Image (tube, rainbow, N blue to C red; front, side, top):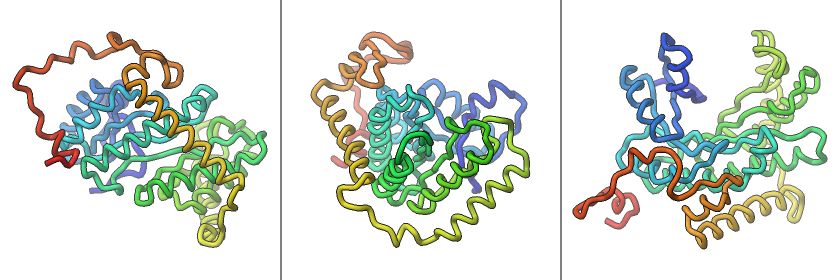
Length: 303
């Protein structure tokens, strides 16, 4: 089977373009009701559509974590994702710690279910603010961190968009810096940036320039990752310590509070979700006295 190197959302495609042809690819869902519709639509496409479910970084809803584990236990997923990091806006950057928690949960859930790391749909983006000093080093540190934490995963690395202003010359340089980090840290799947981002849909000539940019850098910097080391106590190592330290603290706070209490208090991105509120309640039923799910114990390796 041929699979494209990115994902799409089958439900959204069919809603906006009901007559759209179905091509080979991986479709992602991020809510139980969306996943149910996705499976129904994918069934009409035969083996051309792979189905995935993940905790989206723009809204890391950990209340869907049990549903993800149920899907994995039932063998209903071809991949785990979309999950990763989005930092396009100040609001999303404020979610970085929550994104870390969701990212780690998705990866660990996939491993517990026996899904090979090579099938994990993990991705993150290069979104440095060119006006901030040393942000290239912060991006380099975070990309290297993701690669070392998930050494076998085909990480999808996405190009800058938020800080592309329409200045094609500066934009081409930003994409070059993005490509440098991609080859330096061996990201795996490099989604190329366009110099005309924020202006119009790229022309073929724009795409040619982007491919030429990447090929030039990838060839000239092919082995830089093996030659360079990170200074102990330097900016890159300290950035990784900060990110991982904040993630550990968040998970410890959740353990202390309990998942649903943490959601109720708005620990995740200041979004409060009451225990007795939210959507999807009509699909929840009480467990019977004789209820038993053998997959949970099998998945956790207890049997």
